Amino acid sequence: EAVRNVADRLGLNRHVEVRVVDLEMSPVVFCPLLRPVVLLPAGLLDQFSRNEIDTILAHELAHVRRLDHRVRQLEILVSILFWWCPVVWWVRRRLRQSEEVCCDAEVLRAFPHAGQTYARSLLKTVEMLRAGGRRPAPMGSTLGRAGELRNRVERILEGRRERPRPWTGRVFLLGLACVLPLSLRATGAAEAPSASVEAKQ
Image (tube, rainbow, N blue to C red; front, side, top):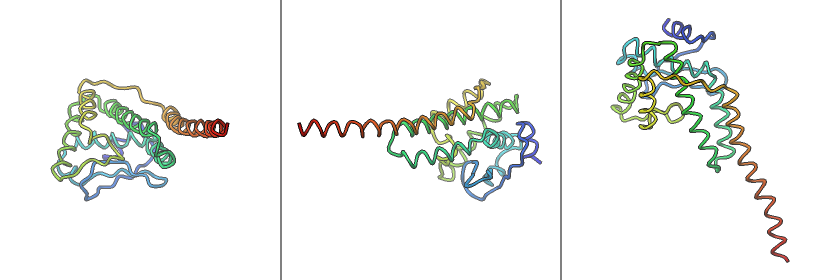
């Protein structure tokens, strides 16, 4: 019922499976193949109020609504192919920062008067993980980076709502991360024969 209510607020029409897991982890959207699943730690349900849970759930469902899990799959593929290129890692970090900010804006849109509740739930999530000696999953959130978390909390408390980045725009950034390494390789391959010719002369 809680998932349905939050999904309706976000305008998410399709069914999303939400599982409660007995693990010390940050909430995350897990999508190994086709259907995304939202994973919520059991400790979160025990320690958080209903309103706090709703805002955390809204953030994860916003990721699903924006198809961020599909972008993540493309991102992983690009990273495997071009792991050696720093541009790829820079694009990955920028994409994740943008996704988190846009999902924060979606939460504030769905719950216009819950800014303080939402900010508190983010901080409580970090405290819960640190109390268990854990760090947020690096693949799923920016909760582990103090500077980025501080900026997010300040933005939420000020009620700033960033304009969502279109899905096509994010794919374009990933495409850029692919093209640049390829162009660097092509340039290196073109320069190598000319260098060998000069050496023979």
